[in-house]
Image 1 (tube, rainbow, N blue to C red):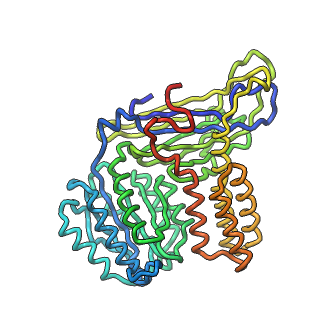
Image 2: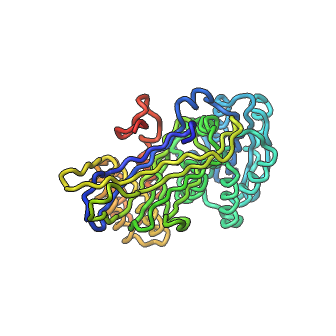
Image 3: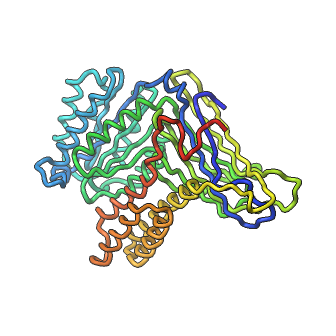
Length: 446
């Protein structure tokens, strides 16, 4: 295994008895950069592209009862973000409303006067909301940016009412293939958080709802820090599951939850799932949950059976390395009796919590169709699962939505956004490295 990356599988159950049919198995894959690599290369230079919605609605109050508009809050957050940048980092600014334009293009962060002048021009724009134009200008900027790490910080307070959304999605995917991470931030009550999650999923970025101006400042700074700590580039994870396994489900649980709904294909008797991680930061732990049903052989001549294989391909620009590979394989150990089986309930709980994001996606789709009866059904199922894993916070979230649905006959966009946010970060407490280097009771020693 390459020295920059640590990978480990953990089984929810092991020493599974022989002769079982369609028995469920849960596995967690954990990945992170090694401490030795992080100490040797703590930071890299980054290019930050701010893509800011400058439509007319950005002049409205932030929604916190104060006098600060959404537009002014964004300018203040961007100015605060500059404090975390190194002089060699660059700042670009794309303002988008009915169209989009560059106000800053690869300006060194050390040129604070020029950057501040560009940010002030956020006040000069107005119009509708065009995501297609915003992503297109971000894409054109890339050819002029040369730092190893690249991040788009995309902020909007509404839905696109101008431009082609299909083209916006395609350009966003082009950014991801070019190694650019896109983080999306929504402000106000009218934007669609589910769409923001869709945008970030292709580059493994993060989507956040900004409830207050201080959230914008905190999260903009975190976005910059993540970009500076992204020394692993163009990372693509491939998880292979034996084709004979049934009922396969695959989820990413940290930094944010995503359901990887369909395999890329089948090769060599293995069903293949792919996740474009783009860049891996030094501080994050990347957790994935794999679920399947298996038949265990009845005969004693087999001591184990292949459960899954993970292959990570990536570049390390700071070392001039391309197409590196880290591989981690896991087998199920077979036992002779149920009494000898070993179980780890925390792995099973991670799987149950991960399934909430799939139900959340279904609930959001039903809400867009106005099928509030189906929304209530999904909420009841989510609440039951949350109760099973003792997540009282998620139980309360579901009940709050059910109460609002009973009272109003529907959920508002703001309520849907809050629910999408809380479910996507349901396991974020496991997203950061701990001092012990141990998560869920397992590290990298075995």
